Image 1 (cartoon, rainbow, N blue to C red):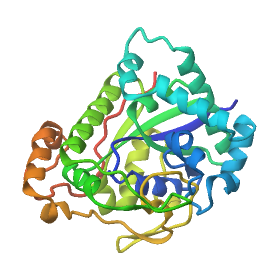
Image 2 (image 1 turned 90 degrees about the vertical axis):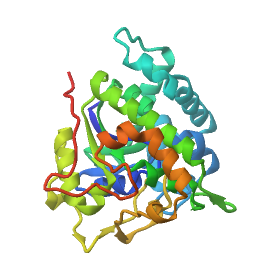
Image 3 (image 1 turned 30 degrees about the vertical axis):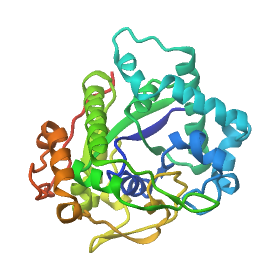
Image 4 (image 1 turned 30 degrees about the horizontal axis):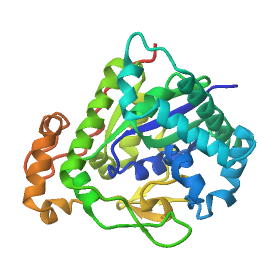
Amino acid sequence: MSGVTVVYLGGFGRSGSTLVERMLGAAQGWVNVGELVDLARSVGHSDELCGCGQPFSKCPLWTQVGEVAFGGWTEDVLDRLAGLQRGAARQRHLPGLLGPSHRASDALNDLRTAYSSIYAAVAEATGARVIVDASKGPALGQALASAPGIDLRMLNVVRDPRAVAWSWKRHRERPHATSGTEEMWRIPAHRAAAQWTALQLEMEAIVRLGGVRSARLHYEDFVADPVGTVVAATTALGVPIAASDLPPVDAGRVVLGPSHGLSGNPSRFRSGAVELCRDDAWTTEMPSRDRAVVTALTLPLLMAYGYSSDRRPRRRAHAHPTRHETRNIA
């Protein structure tokens, strides 16, 4: 099996990773697959809509990928993959994956082999040289870093935790379902803050101990200068995208075509001119108690990442707007 380069987006949900993923996937030679972790645990079983608008079972790309990787997306294949994810790559597995005496279990080896097959099939079906996976869970990313035939780089997509917590509380329709109407999952502000902090600490641990080449991208910088931020982040990851390889951005809008990304934010289904905006509604609409709780629970990282501790957004774009934490693969 020839090697496949994977850029894995890590961090916490509602941080703008869907738009970042789609921008990366629009580059020449790149393709985005959405939140691949959800393929087995929800998308396949419920036959949810692909980003192209077709049900998963009728999407030509994912049908081909399933045939090449496993001979088809049978219930047994989906159940086994979901079980391997639970058994080897949940959040509680990360300390073991980072330990100096780490030994791969049978489940972890099988998970790595399965994902290698999926990534290779995507590369074969699309002709892409780089695959963007927005699954976000740090443990899964670290688990896959040593998979055979995979050259994995990790991009930590960060957004102000107050904006993240506000997004998690808002009512939003989830358009992925093929029957009935669903809402996006909602969680309270204190829980969003705790999870944001936990996942960012895990990403920091991977940078220091995981041996994975990594970079950090701030969503606020991305929407201010999408092309410059992507060029800087991918250069830091060692898989540089040239500005000429990206779709042009005009007046805060970028034209994106449909993709075959799975799960994630409703923006997955928007194509044509897509607006890139910060959405700082939390500064005026978020209850002061929630804002205070989130600020207190995230304060050390909030300050370390360059955000203001009060209600005023402070991130600003610079010539090289992305803050990087990189570590070369041994």
